[in-house]
Length: 321
Image (cartoon, rainbow, N blue to C red; front, side):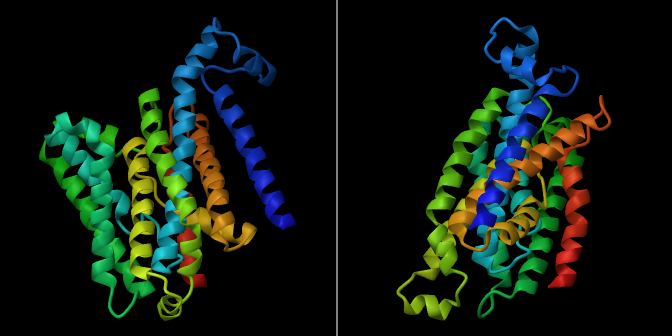
C-alpha cells in the first residue's frame, strides 16, 4: 500500500513539475514565480502567447498519453496478451487511414472524424480478433496478425498519399504526431471523447480483473465474457482513435506504461487504470517537451522519441516472455 501511495504522489509531483517546465521553456521563457504571477495578469502579452500556443499543446499531450496508456491496459486485459498495444496491432493505423480518407475525399464530414476514426480502429480490432481466434486467443498469433493488419493499413495510407501531391499536406496534418500548432478546438475534441473513454475504462475495472481468469472459470460464475470483451475493446478503440485524430499515431505508449505501472502499483485495475493514465500523460508530455527543446528551433516528434524508447523495450519484453 505504501509503495502505491508513494508511486501516485511521485507521478503527480513529476507531472506538475513537467507541466510548469513545458509551459515556461522555449522561445518564450519565464521563471516559475513570474509564470505564477502572469497566470492572473490578463494584460501580459507573453502569457497570452503561452495560453494560445503552449497550453493547448500541453493539454493534448496529457490526454493523448493518458488515452493511449489506458487503451493499452484494456487491450492487454481483453486479449490476455502483455504485448497488445493500439499502435502495434493496427488499431491506430486503421483509425489514421479512415481519418485521412475522410479528409481527402469527404472533407465536409470532417466534424465526424472522431466517430469515423473510431469505426476504422474498431474494424482493425475486429480483424485482429477474427483472424487470430482459434479455440481461444493465441498470444503469438494475435501479435503476428496485429502486425500484419498494422502493415496493411499503413500501406493503404501510404498508397493514398502517393496518389497525389495534394494529399501530402492533409496527411502531414492528419497522421503526423508533431503536436505543434494544436488549438483549443483540438483540446475540446480530445477532452470530450477522451474523458468519456477514461471514465468508461474505470467503470469497467472489475470486468478487467475478471478477464484475468480462464473463460471457463469466469463463465461458471455467470459472467458474460463475450459482452465484457466487446465493451472493453470498444472503450480501448475509442481512446486510441481520439488520440490518433488529435495527436497523430504514437506507438509503444500503451505497451511501455502499463508494464511499468504493474510493477509499481500491482495488477488491480481499480488502481492500475488511474495510475496508468497519470503515468502515460507524464510520458508523452516529457517526450514532447524534450522533442521541442533539445534541438530548438527544430522539433523532434513525440512519436519518434517513443519509437526510440519503445523499440528496445519491445525487444526486451519479447526476450523475457
